[in-house]
Length: 366
Ligand SMILES: *Cc1c(COP(=O)(O)O)cnc(C)c1O
Image (cartoon, rainbow, N blue to C red; front, side, top):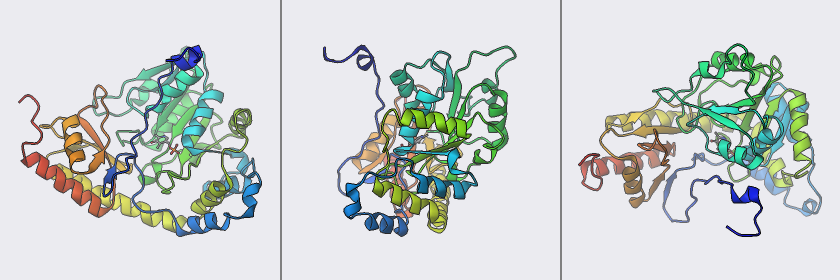
């Protein structure tokens, strides 16, 4: 607290990112990064841009990248907005497209950045509880007749940190039932097995779909995300972006992101490898007695009925393996484990086995 802070800054409750420790030989399964590197074509494209042209500003409209995304998803560039990571895209979405004086709806257990943006932009919000299986209750997002007290809706599909997805029909019901507000589907993990809502964009002017290159394109370090929707929504985002930072993507990011979107073969091969490993990890955890929620993401959300989640996470850490643990009601017994390489996942299973056999972690109630 400082007397130089204004009243808004004083009451912010900022997001806490998963840690990025500098420890050698660490098995890092805590922030859902891709275990395999980005396409070699991405690296070539970036290298080709490391020259004199860096003295020039990048294209403020990011046209080439937006065209590449458009080609990939059958959209025109006017339906595509790009930003410095999907976190920045989401920030502009909260600022520009969700109402500030009527509550924005999102699940109680979801991406924990959403309430942070609401704090930053002084947006009212209402959280809706997941059901007993930690799934979104679609009915909760269908307004009852006469209820106009909704400022917008946002949810990830698949949800984070549970990994559970809804079918396209469920998403469409929510979009169709709320024509007067924007419905944002945050598809950060959609490539790992869920159905994208992109195909509905031409039909619903209130639908915005947000993607990131951080997870399935293995480019968390490049910071590129994008939103797709009706040109009116994209223009609203552009107005905010151009009132904030005209050049959110630098020349290297633009070149790398465009190459990433264009290399479909590398994307599919590495994504398929992660999905295969997810199956093996799920099976291995279940054999050790874990309950694993069905996942369509590049992580699993699992708990052990006899072991405390926080203690399990710290015991793994002592073995140089980090996973994510949330000290939040309803999910504090779970670990969110990023799908690593086969070898990393085998080591994780080995470590879990030895923790469960040993006395390092006491059972709940002992
Ligand atoms: C990782 C993640 C993001 C942010 O991705 P960046 O593009 O790296 O900023 C957004 N939403 C969800 C649900 C995520 O898990």
